[in-house]
Length: 243
Image (tube, rainbow, N blue to C red; front, top):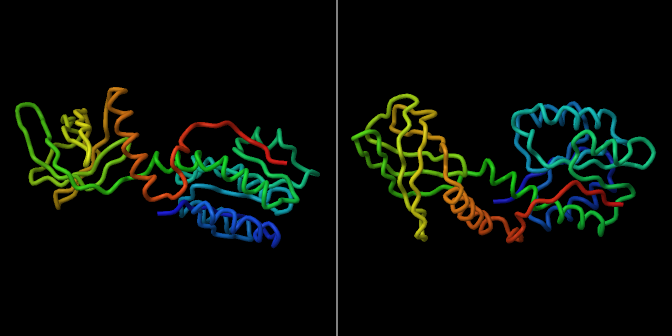
């Protein structure tokens, strides 16, 4: 598994420097040279990072301004490339940009910036990340107890296979132990979707902080196995400008 980024720029030198920098961090790069096309891509696809050449790309600033309105990418980590003549660093941060790179961009500054941003991207990936996992789950609903098998789990919910349907919006208790651990969880959940084949999705409710921390730690460990170089990079940071 790799992280995904969209780079909006017509500057060949920017692409030449940023592509290998990102790829060294296991971040795939999709390059787009038209603002309108970039907006269409951002509606249809999910990216961990969106990098926009704001000052030297017609419509680039508008792409960044509209990004937070896209359901798939409102949480993406954003980067503004500035030429020092039009948009100020303060103005970029005021629009909600996470990181700023000033042109001309050097390989060293690009590496510093994206390395600093990596923890943001991993944390955002974890927010919607679903770990495929097959484990037994006890589903307790009133005086009934059902057996289920999970198909995936995230920090906010779980998908199961059941042989008996659950009522719509039911709030059963789920009891399970994460694989290769002794982390036994007992959480309340609510049915959010189900199909005719016995698959059901549930959202966790009122999870105790200790249980949430255990689950997130386990998910981090699973992600670290799939994203090289991300171990220990989940600490939060603030906006950053790279000159």
